[in-house]
Image 1: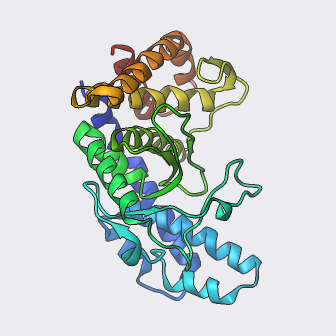
Image 2: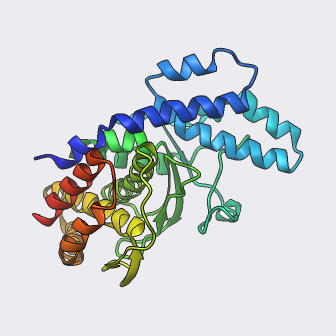
Length: 307
């Protein structure tokens, strides 16, 4: 069974994307009578959804700063100026940027630095866009195209590192569809991290789309964090890491040398971390009220356990 392929297509998420994008556009462009109809019919609803959140965050910040010029720019660019920033990939146009790390602020709504598309945003330099394009293409070739297409619309490349270094990557709930990630000179590794972070974006959307409220009272031991975690964080780990395991197992035959050794070691490590979660995962899944979501999380976890 191809668990990921069956999991990623999820009607509640598609409805969430369309509905929230309409709502955001109604706020940012209140005098545009056709905004809702355009979004509802768009074949790029997931991209619209991601970019609308950037516009909303940027417009709110501009309003608080009484920066009318920037505020008006967001109203005039509900797609955050996609046409001039886009890079073509196998999963559709993507926005790939490499901002100065000093321009990644923190705020009360995010424990990690973040970046919002703005009038000053420029596309990443050519070699980084080529790296990202190859990564998206590899992800698509290994069966993760639908996940990356809908949940990794904006890629913020952070620090350049060497193979074997610790790589940091993250997402934030206020900017769904956006991935922040360190990178090495290997598209296969960047694709792995895109799959991981896109998985977090997918699960956040799925929980919101199904109005699934997970109690913070139940806690489970996380082998990745080596500590007890609320069910929400535990389920996220038991979804995102298995996705990277499945991806790695599929891409391994295409690799050689140091890259092959690196990914083999990664997969072996993840097998050891995932195995002890089997019983607790079943208990945590019982906290999710939506049967379709439970089935998808179970299928991916089960497939990764079998690797």
